[in-house]
Image (tube, rainbow, N blue to C red; front, top):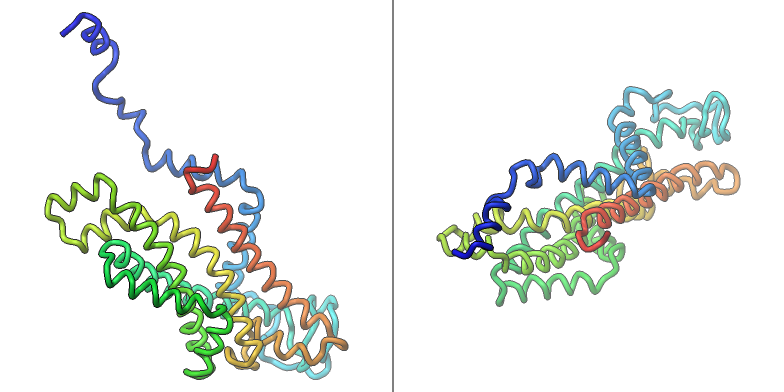
Length: 302
């Protein structure tokens, strides 16, 4: 060993300091610091958290019974007694949109969760095994991609019948191919990593490799797409209810409220504006939040 090499070994330790290594706490702090710079995404997150809280506790804080008619105050505009006015039966619009937020968010979240699970499984299998299985999954996804989301949902609901559960199934079906394609691409990138090759050489079963070694490396892509698809699912569920394929018109749901309000656009325009603006703001908030998460989680963006 030369004298220069010995000096380098004496000056620089062979092992990194444990305090200098990244920890989960440091990564969370770095994420929060980076995400907080996205003002639009931060405002969207606050709005969505407040909306979810209101949706959860709405049955306990609504000022009026959303199903109780009041024929002495039909089609009234915003007043001190009814902040957002009343509908054609004198029911308080504020109470109905607060309760309707629960059903609208439940339909969208349920559909996206089901679509995410199925799409993730199919994408992992297609990216890991390849071959005929990959071709079948991807060609099936291409067939679903050939149809616009809302037209595919209408076709599915028309076949299986209207109803809230069927709307969830229809929205979940057109959610699957996007997750399958994204997860396939992410799986192909991760499965070539050194730690995956080491796990395979040690004899780990495919199931363990998929869910323990490959899946954690694809979560970032899944989170971003999951957030954005919720906004799409809310819009699709509201559209189906508006067309009469979703929730019943007597149920306080944003799409069904718009469906009944179109008959009173000239006499009581507030019945259209309130649920319409809420749908717009909620979908916009989910999209902005998804953009913020993508910019924050993408290591290629500074």
